Amino acid sequence: MDTTTSPLTLHPFTLADAERIRSGEVDPHDGWEGGYSFIDEPELIDQYVAAVREGGDPAPFGPYLVRRGADGAAIGGVNIFGPVGDDGAVEFAFGLVPAVRGQGLAVHAVLEALALIRNAGGVLARAEAEIANVPARRALEAAGLSEVARSGDAIVYECRL
Image (cartoon, rainbow, N blue to C red; front, side, top):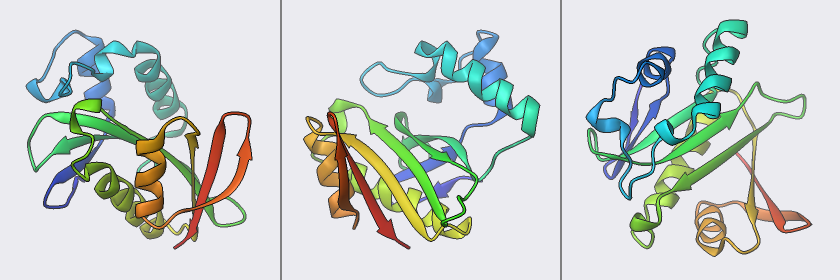
């Protein structure tokens, strides 16, 4: 089921989406603003299909397309890694195309990911950002996550839900 806020929608990636893309059938919503799409990452699609076939639909965990508005073009993705850990933690990752930076959409995507994690029973959300990726770091911080660790070129962020 899609999760929609006023500026964007998180659409859970489905087996039907994956199989359609693998077959070469392209929906107008498959293309991301800025030219990027899941079509360009066949290994991600293959991993998702294998995981679904082995363990069933992972919803509410798994990949989501982030679309502008209720039915606009995809502008990025969110991946929620489940199930909930023994400590109540759920990790997630997100990315938006550079063309939408500065519009506050990344913060909305992170907030919606946090809501999905909370609704799935998570009590702690965790994400990682490269030190050099200042826009991602700012979005995580604006959504209420705080730095808890650094390793190599990455910062780990967490927040209690």
